[in-house]
Length: 267
Image 1 (cartoon, helix red, strand yellow):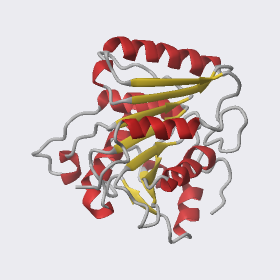
Image 2 (cartoon, rainbow, N blue to C red):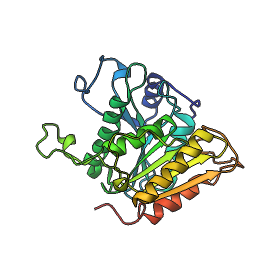
Image 3 (spheres, rainbow, N blue to C red):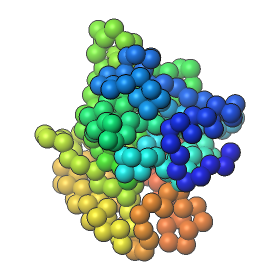
Image 4 (cartoon, rainbow, N blue to C red):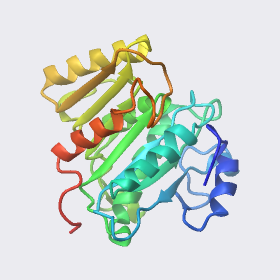
């Protein structure tokens, strides 16, 4: 399927429903979305499923949060292309359509991100996934979301009326691409999951912020890896054929492999 660099949630839903290989999972049932200000399509966050061929699946999963300044989502280079690369590695991918500004703020997006992790974990048996091998990968605004989601994550409530809320929302790995994110009050970097940071040096805000986050996480004792490319820009996405930063996803694969992300079959 070929899609443009960015899509609205409505256009993405229409395009994907036309393709039997992909389908959407709503994060909450209609009428049960927390902090909702309406009941239209833009008020209903969802995941779009991208699965590898059955003979390649290794039980790993990734939730991908595209960027777009929180006013749109870059589904092409920061969503679908990333999902397809993970599929090549045998990983089941879920592209997250989260709630956007000005209608919603970071607090709603934190709810969306944590719920996405819980939902994937709750359906691990259905997708033949290991619930302890889930990556949350964010790009630009999605990278900011990734940091906020990781900081706000925690164990589920075993007494929750909604079965999904009984699951842990902490990702097992975190990927933050061209964006250091925003710190939350009392953020505990030591307990962040193993984190991969990436930016281009000429994208100075993202590069310098990612370098500082690396220093802070490393000092705190967290597992963190940093890649800053000497040339380039913001928004390069998968960059498969780029002469500046084409190898970055191979570096990500190596990082994840070191953490056991691809190994073993799902239990």
